[in-house]
Amino acid sequence: MKNLLRISLSLVAVLPSLALAHSGHHEASLASGFGHPLGGYDHLLAMVAVGIWAAYLGGSARFWVPASFVLALLLGGAAGMAGFSLPAMEPMILASSVAIGLALALAGRVPTVLAAAGCGLFAVFHGLAHGLEMPANGSAFGYAAGFALATVLLHLAGLASGALSQKLAGRELERWAGAAIALLGASLAIS
Image 1 (cartoon, rainbow, N blue to C red):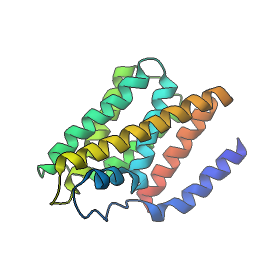
Image 2: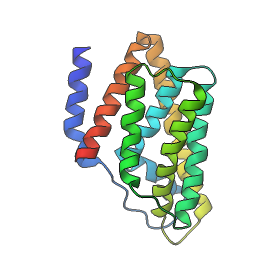
Image 3: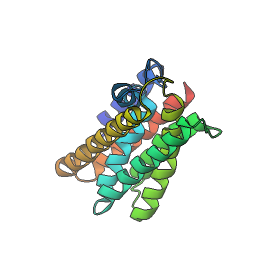
């Protein structure tokens, strides 16, 4: 466990410079939409954390928690494409990985509906960022399909890693992953 903590703290020191990398989209397309969630650690951490937490909660949460995130993400994306924004959007995106990581680290066994609602709320902010940063030319539908597909794949990666960690070390490893995610998310906020 001490090694895991050392590794987590080392990552906290390295990752801040890679945060919030949302630029580089030239046209709205499936490829640029797909790349958006992969282009910043703030999005990556939160979306993988959703999958790990859903695996930790088990049962119907494995479907409903990620599904609520994707649906709210698409709603937020549509609002962002229409020019709507909310204050504190980037801080809420960063808060999502910290909050979900902490919930997991602190053995966050909550009802599925509460976990899904919380993740859905954070997803609205992620979607707004995706929608607002969509390039003006190209296909809005393709762009939205791209960022939704990348999100689903990140959730599946989190679900798979959560399931694997349960087989290897029980639920303790997932809790350590939650702590690492929360620390990394906090490090992005202070960079």
